[in-house]
Structure formats: C-alpha cells, structure tokens
Amino acid sequence: MTSTPDVRVAAALPAATAPRRRRRAEDSAGPLTYVVLTVTALLFLFPFYYSLVAASHSPSDLYDGTPPLLPGPQIFENMRLALEQADLVAALGRSLVVSLAVTATTVFFCTLAGFAFAKSRFRGRNALFGITVATLTIPPTLSIIPLYVVMTRLGLVNNLMSVILPGAVTAFGVFFMRQFISQALPDELVEAARVDGASMHRTVFAIVFPLARPGMAVLGILSFMAAWNDFLWPFIVVRQSPTIQVAVAGIGAGYTPDISVILAGTVLATVPLLVVTAIFGRQIVGGITAGAVKG
Image (cartoon, rainbow, N blue to C red; front, top):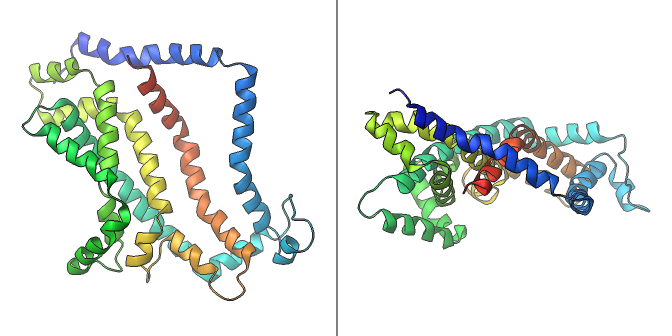
C-alpha cells in the first residue's frame, strides 16, 4: 500500500500542532504553579529518600535518638545482606521476565481490541465493550479462587506462566486504547487505507500501531509497574520461585527483622521501576498531552 498525500498530511497535523499548544500551556504557568509543583514533588520523593537513608544506617541508628536525615555508610553492606537473605538477584530476573511478558502481551492485545472497538463496525460491538468495561467493577480478590482452580488444572502452579497469562490482557487496557485510538486515529485514515486496498493486517501494523504509539507507551509503563508491584497473586501461585515483591517480604520474616536490610531490599526492588520511568517518562507526558490537545 502507498500512502496518499492527504493521508500523510492528516497524520502529520496532530504532531505539528501539539508542540505549539504545549508551549502555550507552559508559557501560561506562573511562579506559583512551579512552587506548588516543586513542593508536591518533594512530598512524594521524601518517602523514597528516607527509605534510602534508613537503608544506609544500622537499626540502632534508626531507633536510638533522633532519626537520621542524611545517608550513612552501610548502604552497600545492607544491600549485600538483602541479596544473600532473599536471593534477590534470581527474584529480580523472574520479575523482569514476568513484567516484560505482561507488558508486551497487554500492549499488543489491548491495542488490537481497542482498534476493533474504536474503528470497526460489527454486530454486538457496543454490548461487548459494555461487558468489558463492566468487568472493571469486579474486585480482583473475587477472581483469585476461580483463577487458582484454573491454574491448578492447567498444571501451571509454581510456574511463571501462571502470573503472565492472567495479565496478558486487561479490561482497563482495552478501554484505555479504545479511547486513545478513537481520538488519535481519524476515520479518514482507515477509510483511505481500505480504498488503497490495504488488508486489515497491513492497516493495523502500518497505520494503527505507529499513530497509537504514545498511548501504547503509557499503557506499557502502567502495565510494567502493575506487574512489577504485584504481590498477592505471585505470593499464592509462585512461592517456590518468588518474584521480587514476594522475595522482599521474606527478608522481614523472623522475630527481630532488620529494618535496614528490609529497606535496602526495597530500594533494590525499586531501581528497575525508576529506570523504566526515566526512559519512558517523556512518552507518558507525550501521550497524555496528545490526548489533551486533540480536538
């Protein structure tokens, strides 16, 4: 399929107008806005900072006298103890595998489903989308027992697939991508592709995925964070090969848990999330802004 000039112009318009509108919005922010944002950022950063400080001291430093506010000298020693007590290296590897697999499958399948609900016309579309959204009202804890029975019959208990499969596609992801594609992908583009003779497969991979990339990035990082921080379900089904959150919880087992070592393990478990956020943070802002200026 070859893109027509009208198609290319229509695809370029949102990208061309978004930076100008974003600059006008930034120019309208006054000093008070920056002060409020700075204070808010410091409030949110303080718990992580104090965890880092507490992880760098001995327990006696934390409990005797005034709690320290500056980093101490034992951060690497406490991290070494955390790595030894809970086998965090293996747990980090397992969490990385689970989180990447869940993120890839969620983004792929939810984008396909979102495109189908947003741009395709088929019988029962609204009813199916309503049922999908309605599942968001079901508390996740209600599905634990049926899901555990299913995983047991499939023979996947104590297998990482028991964590990956339930998160391969989510109702929130379908709803999010449907809303994003509805705004970011003009109907004229899909119609132009059909007139040019493009198959559905080519339309999805040549038009939908490139234009939906900001939304896919946002959904991807949200899915990665949710999979990485998930504790209850991995604690139930993969206790013999725990993920990072389950492994960190095991550090505190005992009558006299070492809070400094526990926090050192927590800091280690948070580092991959910080790396992912630093790499894809711009994509999140771009995706939110693209949805905000559309109109």
